[in-house]
Amino acid sequence: MTVRQEKERELAALLLDQQKAQLANATRKNLQRYHFVRFVERQKAERTLKKLLKLKESSNPSDNEESQKKLDKSIHEAEVDLNYTKYAPLGEKYISLFVQEEDDKQKHKSQMKKKAYAILTDAQREELQLIEDDLANIVRTAGGTKPPMWYEVEKCMKEGQEKLDALREGRLSAGNKLAKELATVGGKDLAALRSSTAQPVDSTPSWLDDDGVIDPADLDSDDDDEMGDGGFFER
Image (cartoon, rainbow, N blue to C red):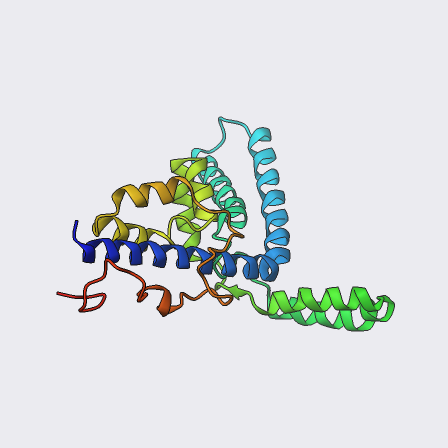
């Protein structure tokens, strides 16, 4: 392997680590922003699934076949809904499953203004404001439609728990592109090693700046005796 190839592999590895650090930062922010919303929607999905399963248990197998198929389809969708609230990537913007009608929004706001704010302590008002800020950041789909990630969750359900966990942690999207690039420049062993020894989500490599960006000076140091006179991309 030439010096240039070694340096290209090193750069690819550094970029992969930088992307992991950026994902960790985005995950922390989105956990705080969407935690309440995901919790509420998870509860709603659990209640819906529970009701549908009870309905299936109480139904007669000899009932209309078409009705049974519709019930099974509803149960499947409820199962995917629940898993969506649990396994949608933590590092990405959460798109709400359930559309809140405009009338319900206005009714909720008026009730909160007239009753809740009058009896809340300062700490509770601050907490409520944070919740409302969370809700303001939600992207909602049109009624009857599912977020694009919903179908990815459905696909991962067929492949097992390990795939769902990988989706939740962002390992199916965020690091895949650079990991493949790393392998193509001769770093297959290194790529496998990094994949098997992935850093915790809250870790930050020591060579990153505080803002999570690689310092260009670290990529090409004058102290590197192996570098050619022509620089990093010497041909």
